[in-house]
Image 1 (cartoon, helix red, strand yellow):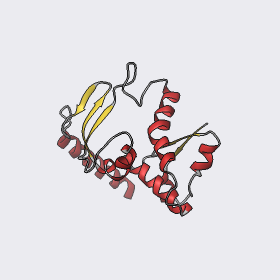
Image 2: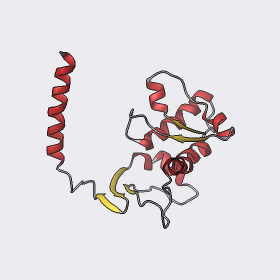
Image 3: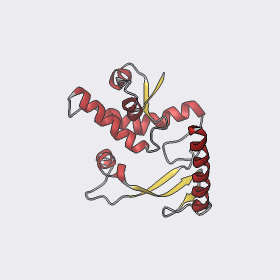
Image 4: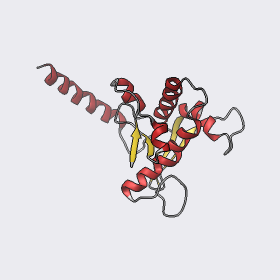
Length: 167
């Protein structure tokens, strides 16, 4: 069984929260996602993490569980649903990688990566994006897209949609 936890959407819609700890204990593969409430999955991880600590009134809760959901379960869910290997740099895996503009103020290693992720990396800008081995964004620029033209077209479409909405 797979469950994808969407903390921001759940809070926005006032529908409560999934008991991810009970689900994980029951052997459910719980991931972290978004239904469109936000495009920022890193921020969704932090929101879920803080939501559960606050709800349970336990400062020590969730550290290992949210690391597992974000770094292990999300790739496992994708692989299970698509049959395509992700989540690691290895032969046969999709070469989807982001490079972040993050300056570590303290030593960064495997033992403290999750702390850096939650309290630093989470807010770092994406500098470069590689999808299936192809660089699609380099130094925060999308060279194959005419962003000003796309934005202008988007504004024109949005204006038409709003006019129709108010008719």
